[in-house]
Amino acid sequence: MRVRVLYFGVLKDVFGRGVEEMELAEGASVADLIGACRERYAGVREIWDSMAVAVNQEYARAVVVLREGDEVALLPPVSGGWEGEDEIQGPSPSTALRVRMTTV
Image (cartoon, rainbow, N blue to C red; front, side, top):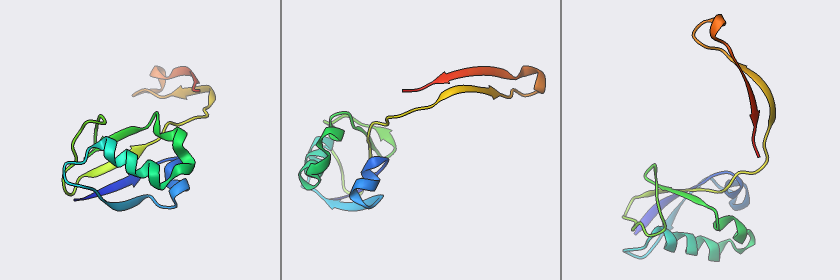
């Protein structure tokens, strides 16, 4: 069966593409797809351990069985961050909210 795989974040850069069609055996699961990707792209093994996966725009677990034509998005963890203050405007200038944000 064929599924469409979408690569995001660092995977898109590492694999040199944002999307590809992949051939898998009937009854293959999300875990099988990730295993196939691991074999093909051995240089980024640490990414796979904390990967989020969505099938047809719904987050999916490794046990989900894929079907012909499914769209599978591979979402690697994001690192880095931003720290600072910002002002969020409400419906009127008097409802502005000052927010301190920290991400890691």
